[in-house]
Length: 145
Ligand code: DQA
Image (cartoon, rainbow, N blue to C red; front, side, top):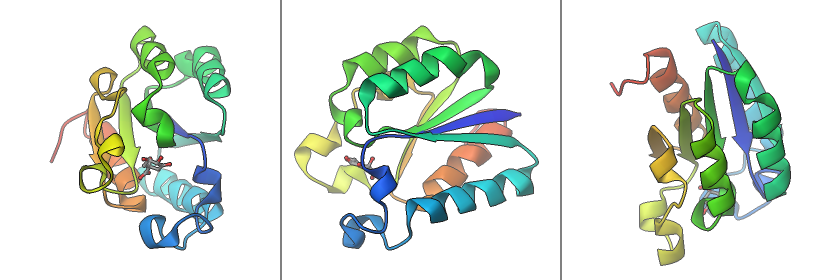
């Protein structure tokens, strides 16, 4: 099992950006957490972060065939990137959308995800645990508990 985990704009600023929303743990802490999960579940995890929409799309287009599933936290791209929606639609790899915060309880512009229709699941509001739930969902064969 080989999973690609992508983080979009500003997620490299975890711990610095709005800690009251996103927490005090850093992006390096998130990577450590994901590596630990990969050992626990005996899966391979590759992580990629970019602040640039086109770089994320290039990365997915160049690497998607190497992965069984993709977990993506697109940051603010979630709310407006039809290019990312088209990219996810164009590959046959099951993709799970994750968010640290609960978008349903935030500003109205955050309540719409334009990529959700291309994703097999959307998991949010559990901080780092959102990624854990996405990994559990994948290793269970894309089934919710
Ligand atoms: C986020 C939510 C987005 O609205 C925001 O732009 C982010 C992070 C989250 O993980 O809660 O950058 O995706």
